[in-house]
Amino acid sequence: MAEHPSPQPPPRERPEPRDWTDGHVDRWQPVLPGLDPDIEASVTRMSRLTRHLGRVREQGVADYGLHKHEFDTLHVLAGRGGHAAPSDLRTDLNLAPASVTGRLETLERRGFVLRTPSTEDRRKVDIVLTEAGRAAWREALDVVGREERRLLGVLSEEERRTLADLLRKVMLAQEHDG
Image (cartoon, rainbow, N blue to C red):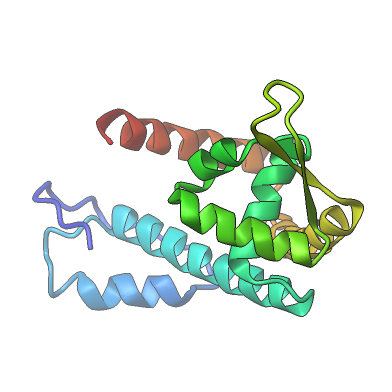
């Protein structure tokens, strides 16, 4: 919880209906008088939303016969245009070489990726996303995308842009101070 010693802003009218977080903030304000209700509400909502989308993602990938780590690997590979060196995947996934090798072996057995000789260095291999791999990734991705569109669809295009801009500002502070 974010406790800040700054003076409390005057109470403001909250729009109805109230969500779970409104009650959470109400419960904590008397306990932590220096609590900034806007910071607490924002962080709590972002956390709950992230957990919700994570559960939807895990269920969505499971519904299509994928494990989360398989989906993540296919996602990174698709984001690189459907082909990459294992070292690129290791970097993108932040994994040890043996972990990536194990993932790629499993995905290759399932027909989702192929290992092909590198066009740049014949001693190396490139990983190529197959049509079956792309189809499995897209189907699982669509589940998450539908839920993201459902949730953020309550905002106008301008509100979504404002939200994205505000979150960018927060992320730049996090990335700068790391």
